[in-house]
Length: 262
Ligand SMILES: C[S@@+](CC[C@H](N)C(=O)[O-])C[C@H]1O[C@@H](n2cnc3c(N)ncnc32)[C@H](O)[C@@H]1O
Image (cartoon, helix red, strand yellow):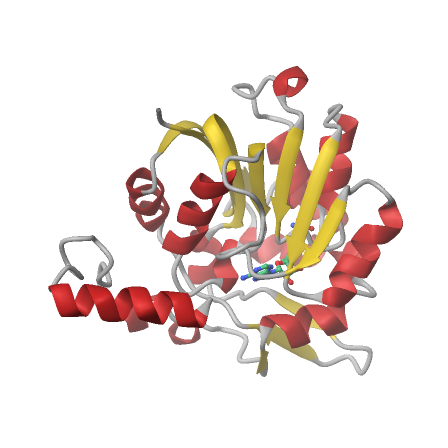
């Protein structure tokens, strides 16, 4: 990815096309860095190291209320018409399992962290599982009815490549479902984090993307918004995680359904 991107950037600088192409930073890059909002100050680890360590216990910790209950609210996608799905940042395969329950027959998964993919493979629901970066996958152009990116965008310094790559791999009028850790929640100072067997907590490197960052990046990549939902720390949540009471009523996750414009 680096070589191709650098070559493209070098070409654009040469042609003075950086700003015109909308690729310049929308605002001060440092405004996106989570560390300025961090209220926990755990040591920060990379995505691969963090999820490599967390893979063994990840599914015991993440609540379905974070993402699956938002997926269940989606009304604009007719699951009977969805056959081929690219599940990017598929992790241990929770989203794939949910898609499979909706009757989706062919699911390809991509993720940066081999230990997460091993868990996904054990579920036996993916046609292919690839170690790779969701911002530049080896998946075929126009090959999918739907791309999903669930609980991963906060690990990207910039969401634009996510929307561009998903637009590339989906067919015309195809869909993108993005579920994210809510930026309002990150702004409360709580990062994506996990607890090590030693009892210490670690933050997995993350960034704050305002909802307008998502909208601008998606529109520029050729997507139209069909639907959006937000999930709160509510009674259902607190029944499972009472320690989250200080965050009651705050939005903790969001789901957006996009459709590729003709
Ligand atoms: C919180 S987990 C979510 C996994 C799964 N989608 C789910 O909902 O359970 C985040 C996953 O994103 C993956 N990830 C983060 N950045 C990525 C990137 N640039 N490309 C591919 N995978 C990435 C991590 O390896 C990890 O498995």
